[in-house]
Image (cartoon, rainbow, N blue to C red; front, side, top):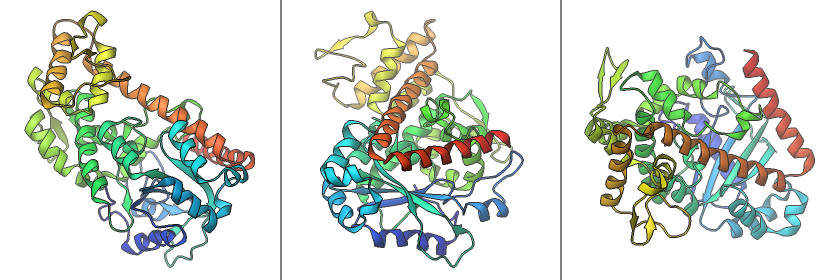
Length: 384
């Protein structure tokens, strides 16, 4: 997932300069409104003025994937001690990594770091930046399985790759994009607009986010990302549209690409469900099917994700997907609503865990400043 030409290459180079001040990373990207264009008003598309605003005075967000977070944090504490709260510096890099994994959603964020880089472009004038650190294995696991749908959710929207991408992450991101398109199509009616599709894609990882419920997130964020990143979204999902949309869902377009139609047959719907990550499909089945219909195979109920898991085979996945659709067509609960509930629950849990980890990992003064900035941004979006 990359910005795909959405920003000036010189800005990309300047963003990459942040890597000079931290230990080496395997994979890095920038994301969010501080990096990519987002419209400022309801009637504003991704205009030049919006693009110019993208990074001016904003917080720039990064994610760094590393092979060994414990060792990376230990070294970074030596290089950048001020990036960590005093109690974390005392406890060490192992505690930072453990806090991210056991309390959070696998990512540790250092926030409100002063931006000291000089910029030759007026489009890049942030005041602070933050960066999340995650293991490459945890990143790939989330991209493939949507265990937390935290990093995976961020990478379902365009990001700016910094440096050479890690091939493990690239392969996992291909799976993430195809899964995201399958879910977005299932959540839409059989006929929809291009804007509906982009909003569905961008909204997958926001429904259920506790920050929205707490008023700490921009209420128009999904709409603004979809509008401001339209070109990047269409380009990053080009392969998925062919493999998942055209080949599995019978996706067709009309009116110059403005109106889209998908096949609503049981076979096409089953194929889309079968494209979802294994854990997402199984959790959806637990929500969707009555307990007496959860067939036992090799001693493990289909849909059970705690403890032993079903072998991840195409046959198992396809059979599970058929069960979902057949139960709905026989007069049962909507499989799509079960999927929607599953995604909300996944995002709600991971966002709550990440929020708690952030509170534990940050000094009280910095937590208060960061929360105030998020609440101010949310209030501004509600006032527009």
